[in-house]
Length: 259
Image (cartoon, rainbow, N blue to C red; front, top):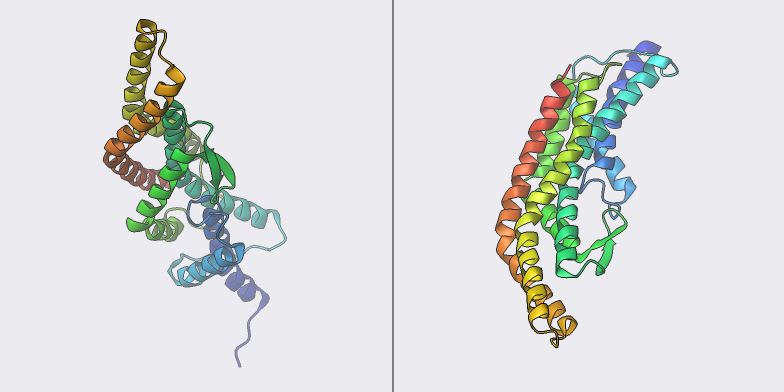
């Protein structure tokens, strides 16, 4: 008859619980997985399933007392690793929100907002359009599978222990906020520059012909030209988003390896 001692039971439960904490934390912060329209139960079941199949691939898990400071330290580190991984990918998506905000303001559509079902906040319609495109590209490029694969690999780079992400790694995660703004600026720059030229031209026309009703002519013209510029720059948006996404995956691996 097979008998298990307390230490073996704690090790078996810990071998499943610690990966579950790291993977579920990633899913709460990452795009697509962390969308508010995705029920929490589905996320929990998905995280549990991935954890179950990940356990045989893991290095030995330390045996600690569940009610101890060591267990609290391991729990905290798993949450930090998972959230940091999901947050970096989320920043790539938010760079498109920033780009859409800049383009919408240039077109005069800054007031046209709608609810983002993924995050539960109001964003300009152009930003929501970019987010929908980004989500589709993320799935088409198997980004969700790459993210799961990266999380499984993270247990080799950062085994389950009290020592998780180092201070340089945390600083590198925080520095990705600047990459978010730079990425958004690079995506929006062509359309915003073209709209700025149109705005300057409309100002010159208004000075030359004061009787022209700028609100009756300029506002529809800005929206029309904005959509034309937006359509023309969509291919570059696709390529830049793909490049930012690949850079994010590479950065996550490098950040985890920092000591």
